[in-house]
Image 1 (spheres, rainbow, N blue to C red):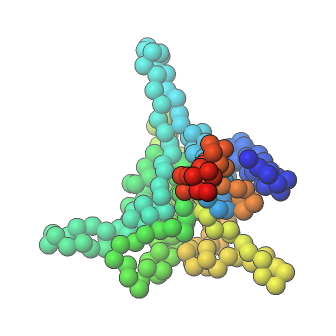
Image 2 (image 1 turned 30 degrees about the horizontal axis):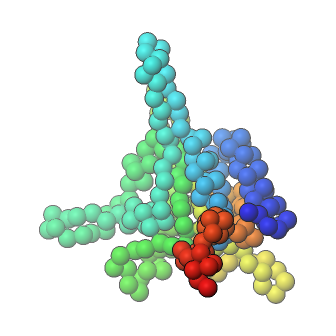
Image 3 (image 1 turned 90 degrees about the horizontal axis):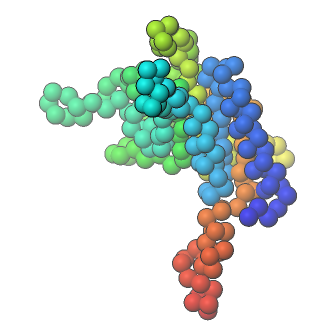
Length: 239
């Protein structure tokens, strides 16, 4: 369904980039990757395929038929991340209170987090504090990821290891936009993350930023191939 050469180039670039990331992410604790662009281009599909690389297979020596696998990855929507980062607890009086965020506990045994739909967060009852709370929670989370290897120790086969944590992020917003002939940070993304959080995100993903802006919505294309438009009617029915 890729109609333009540029769209094909973008998609191929993202696929090859994902393969390169899978082959090299272990060399840099915290190395992350982001896919950005309109809906329906395949960002989340590629992200889930990457996350499968964090599934470990175990085959017991005395019972090979009992083989099993454990995922070292976790999938969160941006809204779920906001809930985790709220640190909300219920006090003795039954009222909701702000408590410490135990990310080390929440992400214990987890080496990769897929965060879907950055920029579509919901924070109940935030009111006019919404942007402040969202920025604070994203900034704190990205700071934790960037310093986890230095501050957190986990045990693998009884041996202490620095915490390995990688992010796989999707968003409908472009990270950069053109302004007066220059590429500048997208203010919509900065509004979500804060300038500090945006800078930390760029540090984590490095060169692994993949643009899907030219890739068409495959869902609409698939619907059209079935003889129906996006509203569920055939062209004859609409006529």
